Length: 400
Image (tube, rainbow, N blue to C red; front, side, top):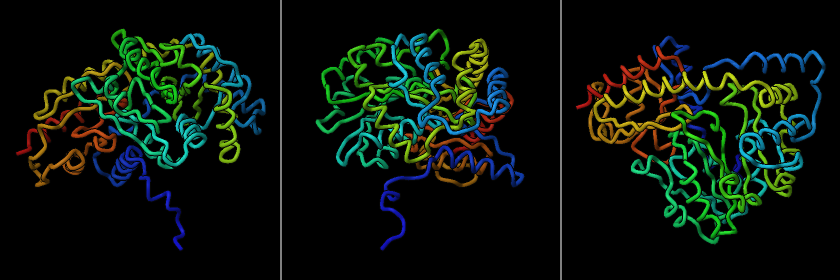
């Protein structure tokens, strides 16, 4: 009898976390490494939010809370969804978890049975397929291509849906591409979903506020109100509020689904950190003035990285609408050999050789379901980005 669960054989560790850990280990060993794998802002949490957390501690708000969130945070989430997205929810329709990842996992665990399919556009966030597998479902990957700026077309969505489809996972702006769907592009997808009433929508809006060049964010239940009753709108405070370590994510959806998610959470982690919840109340209710200047910094970094990567031989890099990632195509590098003698047969070889020979850590495209690419996070300093891109240019120039 095997000791470990057979379920573990269906999943793999997170490649993005693995790259960040490897970069940290190499730095600790004295190597000159620039890490471009981190999916978190390099900004500090705003002072008003930190002070709200400190105040919660000094006031003794350090006990267990309701399993899926304090009433004050649920009220703040309802207000945010109404204010920013035009969506009306009541607290009984809201779930708060230990980060957006737990919210997504809870929803899949609460709804998937063996044989149920989940349509996941690629490139995708690395955890979507594995969480689906852990919950007993079957990921169905629908590949979006560079020609459509890595956005899924309605025809591709239609082709991926079967009678077994239970969920469609949607992420805009996207991790890893930064691609954002316009209202019309999203409406074309929701029109497809209206024709398939058995398919629910799980929309990951984590990068909602990180958009550039006048791009206007929208979310499926906002674009198509008829989908409201079968949409789980997921968000959190990690990215826009620079609160990755505070671990607060949330979702709003039908009461029956939220109750099922609460049951899962009650037998796993129970409540999210009480102090973090009070900080999140301030994040959502307090001043949002820091978001615009932070976005200006991100936009400048995006433009720097896109320009420098497009100057590298064999690389083409699209300009994304949001998030803090770019997803350069390295098709022009495949089949060549690096100066260190590494044959580049795929994007994983490219990233491995880039790290070993130039000290730049990035995540290979196969981890996100679409090759040959790699993901660059520009959530680091201009100095680091310039040096990293200079090294990438040198690496590509040395390929023969």
